[in-house]
Amino acid sequence: MKKILLSFGAALTMFSASAQIKLLLLNNSPDTAAASVDVYVKNANLPGGEQKIIDDFGFRTAFFYDPGFPVIPTPTDVVVAPKGSSSSADGFYTKSFPSGIAAGNYFLVLNGLVDTNYAATPNPSSLPRDFNLEVVSGVSFTSSNTSEMALTLHNGVVDAPAQTVQSFITTIQITPRDTVEDNLAYGSTTTSAQYPAAPKRLHYHTTGTSTPSYQANGNFFGSFGNQAVVVFTSGLVNPPAGGATFGVFAIQLPAGQANGLVQVSELPKEKVAGVVQVYHNAADPALKDVDLYVGGIKQVIGLSFRKAFQSAGFIQDFDYSIDLHKKDSSSSVLNTNLVFGDDSVVAVVSGVLNASQFKANPDGEATDLNFYLNEPARISAATGTTRMTLFNGSTDAAEVSISAPALGGMVLAPATKYGKFTLVAPTGIGADLPTSLGKVVVDLKIDTTLYKSYLVPLTSFDGKAVTVCTSGFLDTANNQNGASFRVFAGVPASPFPAVIFLQDTSITTSITNPATADMSFRMFPNPASSELVLGFDLKDQANVSIEILDLNGKVVQTVLNDTFLAGTTYHTESVSSLSNGLYFARVKSGNAVSTYKFNVLR
Image (cartoon, rainbow, N blue to C red; front, side, top):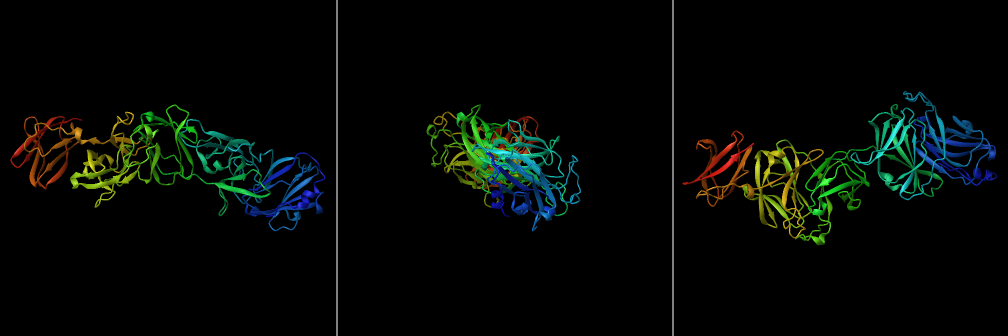
């Protein structure tokens, strides 16, 4: 492609004026006959009366020209000819300017079909489909603001209905979507307007409808500050075989654009990102409730401590600028930029605003407020199994680990420092934990020392991938009297994941009248609704039997009667067949017998 020859400009220096002519040309004809063309200007003042200004002008390419001369007051023709032409006499289209061309900015677009039989679908608004040179004056070719772009829209799809174009960032933003243009018909161009140079999603709707016909990812708008941008639709809604399909493109005119080809980029179709879960796990009392901002826009959903939200409405390859504000505050306390792919993500907000006012982490980990990401994450598991990931979110806790005493102390999750994720994948079992184990007891160790044992209801997690978070402070007095230490499981659900606190076995054990068969016997929960977990410790191998009796002393259920090795044993027993009321667990070991009360309550 060649720019306009200097002889053209030199021949027109006889015309004096203070304003100048600037041209932006676009070949947007989807007809293969116009896939590459030559463009001529015919004017009596030119040597030979004409000049080829562009040759080999390809489809969806744009050309900027500032000839450095003012108005053309004499009649002028613009002629379009096939690629490789020798003169304007080879042309198949002529656009005449009988009064010449006045000073100003001109956007010249080749639209339509050289042969209207190329595409069968008529224009829905009965507009002409013939090949045409659209001439639009007054278009901005510069922007006056480094944080804004001069935006112009053009509908160049000959078989498309009038379009309403909306701009937004998320589907849960408080402010309504911005209607950039309403009812933009084929061949029409909007008035240029200053617009924020920031990532935006552009949805094209057939005017009068609510379902978008095209969803464009305008992430690169964020780099268009102090530039002019022309966004145009191109191609055909119903192309013939091998024809150009509907798409959205942007012509980029940076400050000081030189004569010649200019950047034309396609706005890719949106691709839905994986599911995103966000858990608020920051125990700093000043952050109990926070507002969520995305791209500087407040969102409908905020975050509260130990609560969560889940969304499948984010898109891939889009720069989401995320801010957290204290509730009803205009100031950000945390900013980050997140870009999602097709994998699901678990994001945990954890930490404190001013680390100097809180107890330091024993492992030396930074405890400043931050987003912690587990990616790729899972939200589901195979039926009959669950997947669990441990996140250590307690700022004053050393590394934590999880083991199963009923499995000989098998490590389920190795030592995990603050701010880190670890997949629970015990040796010999793997990451897919069978939920048929029911309610299991796990020991939580902090820096190798047993802290507490917790009851994990695996059956409640069937088919799910859950995130188990340590949360709160071990030492509340030295942490601004913040929330005390707890452990919860985040279970995926839209729009709000369930947050299930794991029961601490030390406060659910209900033992009365322990006797010589004690064996550190414990059972929980009490009262029970569907299942009862019973645990005991043996110093040596022994036979143990457990029965459930009603108030009349009648055995209503035999739990177990077997020989057990030395160590800790947990057994989960269904009590779903028992009516509400008081019962006794009778435990026998050798010649010793003990009884323990529990209630069934639904």
